[in-house]
Every structure is written in structure tokens, then in C-alpha cells.
Length: 458
Ligand code: TRP
Ligand code: ZN
Ligand code: CA
Image (cartoon, rainbow, N blue to C red; front, side, top):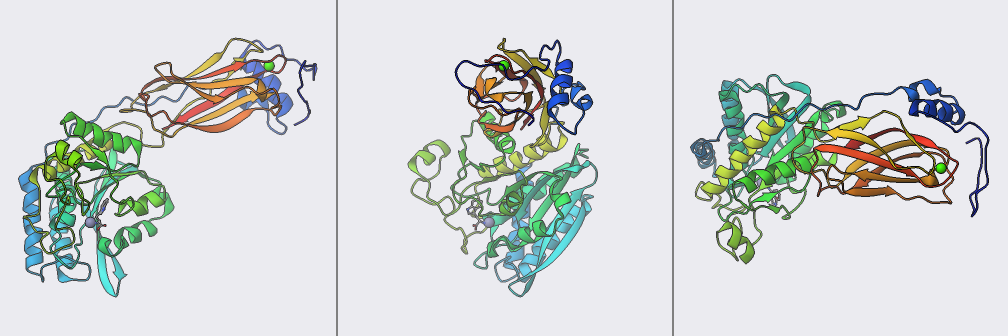
């Protein structure tokens, strides 16, 4: 910067250039023109309307018939029985499982793709099904692994998730759904060998395509015989969606803690795709408190047949399978048909607001619409304030209900120019929709500036 100042008690004037400014536009001209070398004031002075998001309107999901989901499990059991008792990677039962799911999807009008890979010397497949239409730049993706371990038929792990996702896809077709987003469904191979299929898919997906995935939802074990109702603690919008769904049915949920990253959402999450999912429990033991709220047997595993030969069609809790299948459809319909902005959407106000010298606080509003539930625990607040002595400034984020979050205090020793920073605020106790404000107050004399722009990223 072109001038240096130091601040001590009892300030002395440090410059003589004009600082009487009537409007934000004039402030922009004066300050930017003087302080930002090589960039003209014109663009910074242009006012812009805050970006407006469309209202949230989503279609209601149909009920997913439990009988249909169970019919898929019966077929997967028959496939295992006819193929040495399992549907494991590299075994005939796996390919037969893929063929079964693919035939259903092809008949329903999906565009299916088999992705072949090799693992432990054997060929494996991922099955991808795209529902034609929807915005190709906003993909809502649900997936599940289709392979079992060699010990058994894998009906809860993970025929259950595979059947729930399949029946949701078939419901999309039955309803002739015309989603706003592009819908994609995936069945992964060789999950039991270390997430091999889903890692292969993500590794071979160009980063431009990864960036189009608004959310990946994972369903691995959703019909455990002694069930819990666990929601992945990942993308806040997806997590809230599932929690609200179960809360509305009077079903308490807990955060999934049995092993973060133990399923196919991990490769997506690792490349920055927002993820979520549901889980009804594996080999961990149900506590007394959990049996109290969910029923079932305390002191016993959620799935006593996890990875063993008794994981058959008898190893399913119908109520858990039914609720979780309906939850999958609810998520697909809500995320896929809504005009709800996807995770990572920004709302910005680029109007300039003059901050008067030692004056009253000024505010710049951003109207947030189209969100469901609360703001995220890591709400990003991007601030761009032009000022000639930023230590003068006290900056708050004000939530729609008036709660203020201090972003920055004043500091008489901080003589640098401008506040250009991104702050992270835990706003999870605040409803997302409504008018948020950036509140800025200048508490020390002489130096001045203006809010150039600010934005909220959900
Ligand atoms: N297929 C997973 C596995 O064998 C099952 C599992 C265990 C799981 N813990 C989980 C799935 C937690 C999701 C979340 O490891
Ligand atoms: Zn599994
Ligand atoms: Ca000042």
C-alpha cells in the first residue's frame, strides 16, 4: 500500500486525500481509485442486486412398496442359493446379481452402463443407471454395494440397500418423474474387498464430472434384524433431510458412528462430493438406551449375521427396510425435484454500502430462500470490505432471528487496509431461510471505507 501508518494513543491525521463521501458509489471511486493500483474504480462501483434463489418446491415421494423391495431380496437370495451360497466379487453370484438389477432398470427406461474392473485377479462390475433428463450439471446420485462376502448371501449386507435403491429407481420410472436435477443410481462391486468398485468409479470420473454431483447418498445395510436408525454425519443439508424425515414419523435417529468411511460414500467424500446416507447397524451391540427408543434386543448386535452364512432373507427387519426405503425415495424426490439450491450454493450481495467514520453500524442484507432446515455448522461468510485502516471495523454476521455472530473485533494496532476474508461460523442453531445481514461499524476516527460485497456459502 502506498502509505504507512502506525496507531498509538491519540491519533494524528495521516493523510489529506478526500474522505467526505456521500454515497457508496462515491466511496468506491475515491478509495479504490487511490488504493488499488492497476484496477479501475468503475467495476467496483457498479451496484448489483443480491442473487436471488428460487423458492423451495419439491414433489412428494411415493410410498415405496415393502413387498417390491422384499421381492428383490428373494431374487438375490435365489441367485446366491444357485451359486454356491454367495454373491461375492469374482463369483458367479455377483454377475447374476448385476444382470438381475440391470434387466429391471433397462425395462424401466434407464440408460445403464456396466463398468468393468479387475480386483484380486477377478473381473468386477459397477452398474450405473441414469434417468434421462434433468439438469446434467446438477446430479443427485444414490448408490449401494451389490456384492456380498463369500460366507453368505449378503441379504442385509447389502441386498437391503441395493433393493431399496433399485425400487426407488423403479418408482421414478413408474411415476414418470421429470426431475429438475439429473438422477443417477449406482451399484458397486467389490465393496467387501475395500471399496474397490466405488474407488474405481470415482478415480475414473473426470473432475469436471465429479463437480456436477450435488450429492451422493449411500445405503449399506438398511434392514438389520435388530435395527438402529443411523444417519451419516456428513453434508448438513442431506443429514437434516433424513433426520427430519424420521422425526416426522416419530422415529428417533442417531449419528452413524460404527465406522466413518467404511462404505462407498468415502471415495466420493474424499474428492469433495457432498455425501450422506443411512445405516441400520452391523456388528456393534445395541445398548439398553437404544433398545428403549428403537425396540429390539439390547446387548445383542444390530446384525448378528453380519458377514456370515445366516445373512439370508430371514435376516431382515421389515419395518426398518420399509422406513429406510421410503427415506431413500424421499431424499431422491426432495433433492431431485426441488429448486432447492444444492450444497455449496452461494448467496451474494454486491451492492456497495458506505461505512461512516465513527458512525452508526450499517448493514447489508442477503435474502436466503429455498433452503430447508437450519444453516450449516460450517457456514462460510465471505467478506470484502474496502477500508484504509481495518482495525477501525467491528464486523458481525446477523442471522434472520437477530442473533449476531462476531466475525471481527476492532483493533487499534491493525493498520492494514481492507477486510477481505472468509469466516466460518457455526450457524447450525439458526434457520437458514430469511434475511441475513452483514453489520459493520467503524469505531475510530479518520479512516473510512465501504462494504464492497459479501456472500454466504451454504
Ligand atoms: N459393508 C460395511 C462393512 O462391511 C458395513 C458397515 C459397517 C458400514 N460399518 C458401517 C456401512 C458403517 C456404513 C457405515 O464394513
Ligand atoms: Zn456392506
Ligand atoms: Ca474510521
